[in-house]
Amino acid sequence: MNRVIDRTGFAEIPATCAESALQRAFDRHDLALAPAALAAIFDPEGVISWKATGEPRRDGRPVTRGSVFRIASMTKSFLAAAALELRDRGEFDLDRPIDAYVPGVRFDFAGEAVPVTVRQLLTNRSGLPEDNAWADRLLGADPGAIDALGAAGLRLTAEPDDRYQYSNLGMSYVGRAIEAVTGHAVEDEITERLLEPLGLAHTRFEPAAYSADRTLAAGFRTFNGGRSFSDEPYVGAGALSCIGGLFSTVDDVARWAAFLQSAFSDAPLHPEVLSARSRREMQRISTAIPLDAEPSAEPQLPKLQAIGYGMGLVVEQDRRFGRIVQHAGGLPGFSSHMRWHVPSGCGVVAFGNSDVFGAGGLATRALAEVLEAVDAPSEHLPPWPETLDAGKRIDDAVRTGEPLDGLAGLFSANVMHDLPAAVREQRLVHARSDAGPVSLRQQPFEERVLAPRGPAELRWRIACARGSLVCEIRLVGLRGPLVQSLAIECRDVGTAAEGSTI
Image (cartoon, rainbow, N blue to C red):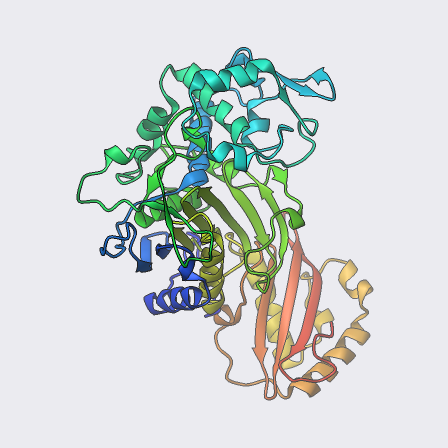
């Protein structure tokens, strides 16, 4: 399914492909760890396929597509979006110290008081230490108690801006700052500014907000690998609700992800709700995360080139597929995960109603399966017209045997110096010999283009009798772009020449 990605960033995912990917992911996951599991694969238009197992309340009623699960820390993406919406209106300054909005809160590092900004809290580089175990049970804490903690002084384990450390408490102060600016509860601001205008009718902070006919998954815990479960009541709503209090459905999460991902397309959804620029800012690494700090739930999956925290979202740079945005959610009784591939808009959301279920592993596996199946692109931006034109000229020359140094005006001066024309042509002769004669019945050039890597890079395949030649070019970004590097590899022939650069 090789093709040049269109300008919307949309890559069609067949329903059968999504169903197969979900089935394989479920088959390889330990479903016994939760009474119920629900996952869906979606694209920019909504849910393509969903799969569920078990009973969300252990009462004989099965999981449905519309079952509601707690999404926990996935809530942070909504908090960040609300903060950025206020920033865009000129009502909120992310670079002001947090105590300008929440008076009295103090931060100490190495015995000295230091300022901490809204942005540092929102991007998890404030210096506050990781606090998941402590914060999970304090979701419903009284605001006065959290104020008292801040007034007593919070101790930092790193200087602000120095490193990534995930702090629920720190991000909750962003919610308190929003309340100070607006005069309303932050949960109400999120609802009115985001949930309602985006039509997320089944995403709410309180269980009581759902009608009686809507199934709410109950929370459970297991300490023996799922052989038995104990009830886990919902952690209440309070001062930390803004960082983990939301409940939602797979369809609503898919719609939220599509809203965020569309910021990279030519037609961003609902620009009146939040600017595309701010949504892209959420999905851009602000704070680097050491690769060993976030171990992959699936060690056998391709390794990441980079990972970091944006704003309310984790950003991964996959070696093969490019940018993937995600966030997990975990509270006593629940595990959730959402992730989407920015270039294609394909994503997965997964829920389980046990805190040890590991929804992230299920979602990661399902997304990798579907991206591999459709040969998803690694870039959301299409090649420049000049890049395609250069590729076509080189393709014609390689297929017909025309000397590459005769392609006037195509290469920058370094190309023929970096690898002299005579040497390049000699290697190309050997590659053609290994791969066999070039097939006279090639697909159209655009259909031979491999997953794009950006506007100035292009890879494509030339079919040969015993294998293929894979060509790759990179242009320099001048007003009139020039090819600054060219590589041709002999593939699929199983010889020592395979992978050699020409």
